[in-house]
Image (cartoon, rainbow, N blue to C red; front, side, top):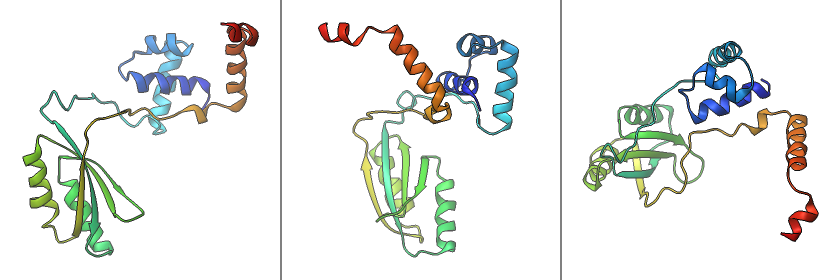
Length: 179
């Protein structure tokens, strides 16, 4: 992977609908080169999919909740039962196995507090794999991004060269201090 691939990935993370002609302007390659590189990144699995980002609030999903779940017993069979449960719930957006006090952290998006009560009291708590549930409702989202950090993919010498070019374009240290 070279700097052109990284630029292409960065551009597509910002707008997955960019045409190869638009990518060519951003990346500094021809449209056909961008097309070949995009196809290669798709084949390699670096680009997993394209999708529309929906606005949950516009769709009536007013609450985001994080649920910490502790299993009743730690066995492969119990873990499989819990995995089957969360896979069946459309409200569950993300689920993570954790170290620490809780076994799992679940992110769910729901319509209202009544839906949260149903999810906790009628779905999670009665399930035979679950021993303990603790929920936290999101009051305010401070940051949301699906963009991955890609700076580590750019070779160090390229980053250093870009840094020195940007310093040369800017003002000298003396003129910056006096302003």
